[in-house]
Image (tube, rainbow, N blue to C red; front, side, top):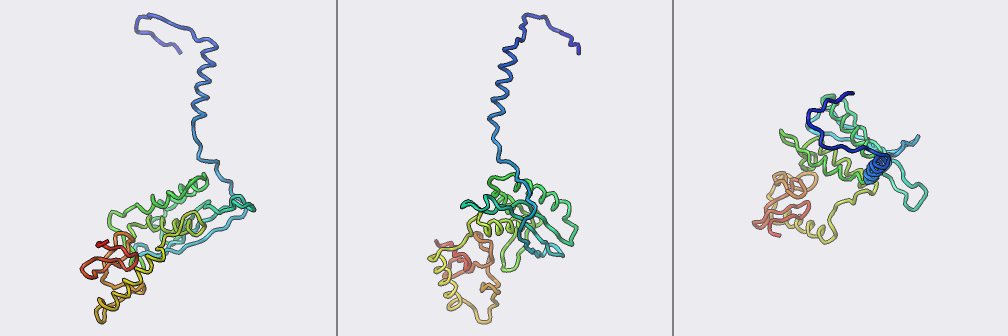
Length: 231
């Protein structure tokens, strides 16, 4: 291909074999600095997993979320399970397109290896513009995607990749005392109580996202996690 030179030539240099070798060495050095997350996992012939049923007020039919696991370092002291793929099935076709896209991307991340626990926070931080919803027990869920994130979190806890959250014995003792005090001294006669033992008129706790916060002795206190505005 001919190239027309518009400007006056003021100097030139020839590329020799050493220049080519140096350029190849620099390119090789640059590619060596690329950090790979891990080799993609191969799918075994037989795989096991768990299926979770999710029924939300925003969908007519339930979602069935299946997460399959692969066993790593089988037979060794380092044997453990890690998620390999995820499928979501439902009779409701309204969300079919984006659910298929989401599960394919998540499965690709699972197969790549490395730390996949970041997916939980990413999914749970998705908010529905029209507002979220309350599921059974009075817990607020900001979106359907966030509820999928909660299922992934539950699964990772079940296989040991995430630590199960919970109160220590001192915190649990305090919560139990607060519940007993409320029912003994502050509960109104005939007041409706949920199946979880919280007043139906309770406020949403900003810490655990559960409708379990009530006013006791002039202080907003959560009967689920013990969070209190008074410290």
